[in-house]
Amino acid sequence: MTLSSRSLPEIVTRSQPSLAETDGQSKNTRVFEKPRHRQLAARARAYGGRIGKRIGVMLTAAALLSVMLIPLHESANIGMYDYGTMKFDWTTDPSAWLKPADPAYSDYNVLLDGHAHTTLSDGRLTPEQLVEYAIAQGFNALVVTDHNTVAGGLQAERYARKKYAGRFVVIPGMEYSNCRVHMNLIDINATVAGSSNGGAYPSDDEIQRVIAHTHAQGGLAIINHIPWSTRILERLGHARLPGHPSVKALVDWGIDGFEVINQATFDMPTLQFMRAHNSSHLLFMTGSDVHAPGKAYAWTVLKAPVFTKEAIMNEIRAGRTSYLFDPTGNRAGELPTYSPRYLALAPLAGAAEYIASFYDRYSGQYSFHGTHCQRDIVDVHSRSIGYLVMYIITAAVLTELARVLCQQIRFCVVRWWIKRRSNSTVAEPAQPV
Image (cartoon, rainbow, N blue to C red; front, top):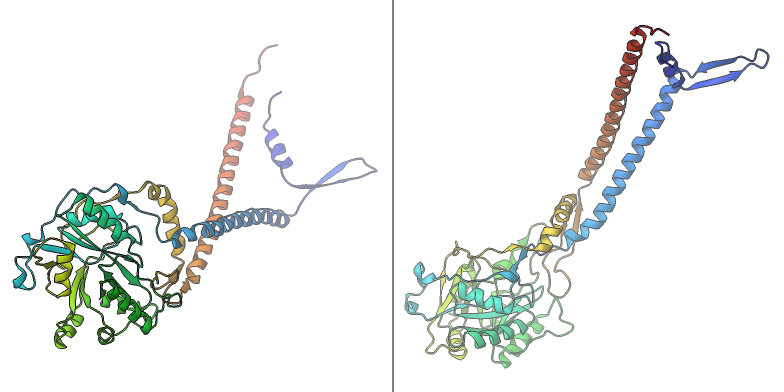
């Protein structure tokens, strides 16, 4: 059987929606097509249903993805770098380009870092790695001051005594940390804990009690990075450490000294206060405050008669110290490599960052007591979310229109092909029987 040229209209006619009614007397069937506007309305409803389903699926997927990825963003740390494999086989000699602020200390024999952290609090280097890193940065003495624990300092001291006896000295300490003050307690062998009701917001009496307990252990109490602590967080409208005591109050409470250089920040107002009030009994320190490998900016220098922890501490207590300072920092050594965990989570982290662009969360300073020093502020960008919904709807509509267009093109091609085959069949000469 061959297709005639009349076959195509019959095929097309049967594909259209129709309504059949039967005449019982004549037994003839009459076929009525639906009005054109009803056909268009039915097709519009079908298209609208498909588009609605697609939009619903896309919005649901976006909501589920947000619920899954926002916690990844809020965790704040997925371990981008692998610090465990770092080897500090390079050295820095700050004396090659720096001189002490006080020329009387030009013959110094101790270069001390007075503030450093390990993995026993929020640092990235183990106590053993921190010792190796300090040596690479040109230090030969180190005060380890993990937040609210002396454990990292004791572990680093054991390592240095075993591997670098007579060449590198570790002084155990801790950074007493809360929402009022960050204070280094150095040359102690046991953690000085605040009272159970002190917590994140210790009273004036509580801070004085901690200073007294430090002195009872033979240690020193040094106030850290006042500019960092008292800086106003603009979005929150409060200082990073609310209620930070004044320099004068701290001196009255028996503080031993101040950290006048923290990383690349020089605390000139505090140093001027010490000089203006003839506070000869107050000592000053510098600290890298290292949490992860980077540049070194300052070295506390002093002259110890013998290279021991006791001799170094005697010089510090006497205030016989100076410093080297370079606000640009030295050239960083080895850079860490990306961790396998980060590479595995990086695509999700990128998506999480995009989702997090629809809101801002200001948590303030961590208290190191399980809370934050300021009340959380969450600012949701509702207009951006509205635009995202609009983009999703637009994408769904365009996808549906593209699908319909492709179907129409396909239908036209098939119809053309059928018509061409029909014409070629009719044109063929009759074969003799």
